[in-house]
Length: 513
Image (cartoon, rainbow, N blue to C red; front, side, top):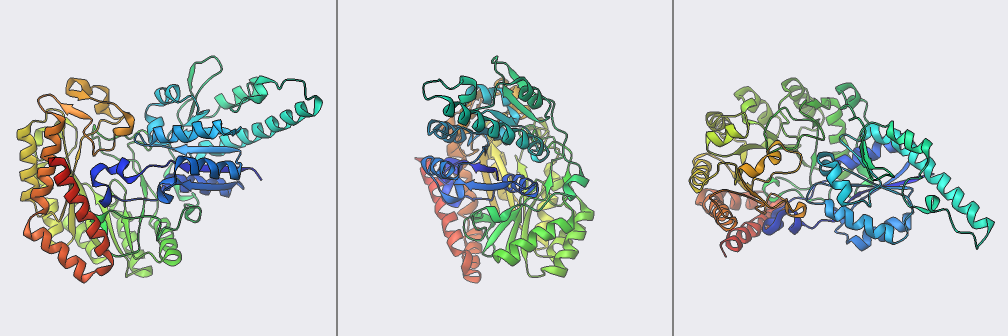
């Protein structure tokens, strides 16, 4: 049976979260789990190497792959991790691997030509949602691999003195007209052809709601143990063991700083029944007691939300959960419903306390909507985490201080302030130079390192203002007492709270230095 390996590249928490690494999360790679599930359903042998969760070095990843001897290796990569994927792929081919090496994920989907020209080690790129694409692509690649092995064997048997055909010996795709034509007929892939030209096939259509309903459940069993290998954010720890899920694809928001090239701008949701089956695996197999739904806007589909809450009450009434939401969809009816059915925290994207900045970035919300939504959540006893950023276009020291003051005026329980990062593929990336200076190093685009500096500000000043915001928010008696109370009432999360506190202290005092 042909073997395929999907790889989450090695990336440390320090690389992902910078000085705040001790409070950061490590989440399951859901994209790889879904890709693996459709391949398993088609009869392939599949392995997943989550290098990040297993804390593997590049050398250890390469050794594992070589030992398994797969026919195809596929890497996923965000902007912050694409260099790591390249490093492992390069080491892999230098170690003698002869199969195809693919790359997919948000970064290459956003900038496929830039990525493939910078990293020619990758034979093909899978763009956007990959489930249908790999079902067409992998049989072709696996057949090609078999023919490659047969021809190499034939030539080695003929004569030890006869040189191996260079086209056959190459580790990538065979240079045959039939294979080239077949590859060019598959939607959703990109590559550099034998002439050095960049080829991008027509985009793959997004999966419909009906197609999502027929998807096999994610192959959680191919990941490291969900109850021990992964760690929720310190600010999202309620009960342990805790895990996370994704239940929608696409986002209807038009925020210029978000990249929607992978899943698009139309929201497509897995059904409430599908969600409950994923929850069942987490609860019954791994003993999970708390789940964070990392969808961009988990509560946007009111009908599905009501169905989910009803099924949750029927099947897992003791499960606690949290989610992300947009402030413009939060109503009293919604808040009352989720509170009754185990929701303990809701995280909302606020970004700035200045309406003009929200408008420039097409956030689509108002300051009044923020106040109303946070007030409702506080009224019903649902803890609220506010996401903020600084370093926006048109940002000044005055607007940053207004944002900090606005955050302090809200009854928020938790607070995150990162730096605006113009990721490749976002609308803001295309004309960012009219607003400031961008240091576009892919491996520093983690949102915790200021890579974009608006005109009139400096990198050091942004770091100092972020530290000031964290200190002013968390060093208040109300917040300190709440965390002490949490540790006393829920001892299982005391370790996570301690890590979060340590991360906060590092963020405040390291930044000030």
